[in-house]
Image (cartoon, rainbow, N blue to C red; front, side, top):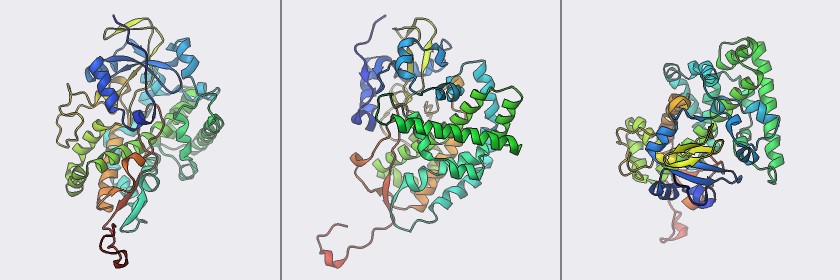
Length: 421
């Protein structure tokens, strides 16, 4: 077994804007690499498709934080107490059999037949968000649409009351963007955590009194009859509220950025909406909002594709790197709407495969189809270098996406024949 060289730094503006050149270099060197995150924590990154596929189903790798060693805990457990103990015992940090029991409590709400039946309702939401826009002009698609649509959909699916939908602060979603103890932004980070935790506590009280049949009500009932602990209840609601909408917002933005970078494909999709299902799959493969998985750990020293991994060190799978592996996807850096088959890993694989994948696909189809239909001649309002990519460690997306749409107004004659519109 060989030991990789010094850790590769997975941060910086160039990496955040476009990590794919680095991923290509790492894949060429091998499937497993020592990397360092902004927090200073080091991990082992899996990059190739086949290696990623195997790691996501490797029963030796567990996800419960108790498996992490002291070196990992010293830098990775950034969320302070009591929130870490009270909000971090959701499905992403559980192993069977507890993971199986928790997942069973939420899957019915996201069943394909159920969410497909809600498609007309989701379409009405998407159209309503754009009804107030002029026929032509400029807009920030995150502000007017991508930052709002997924949360409205989530509220409908899980049974979030309207008053709680209105009260939710999207800024709370930033709690998944690590802020170290010495960071100047730490007080604001901890304030977000406390605000979100109080919101969840109030929501639980409301749902306990309401006695509904929706997912949130069923989760509260499961707490009351002993199937869920209080920390598990709060953590699952935390996961639903944050992981249930922010990644979809990010995926809408990454898909739109990709299309704006490929105007010919954008025009093709705008003129042929029947291509949307396959186009969405290719956009998910080409640039996924879930860039990296969350931590996994070996209980004892183990070999992973020829690399020795110490017990308790974190193993991370790069879904984005796997989805650009030429051994699985010919011409991987290009955008091909007719790519088939397209077994991308944008939603993960194995027992932690995203339970909301069908819902997310429907949201993406509706979002892109509606935006391309309602905002013709869509084009960027700022250069590509002007986009601000979110600083999240595991996710990709932009926090603003200014665009211009509609037929440009004619240049005033006073500007002269050489004026540029």
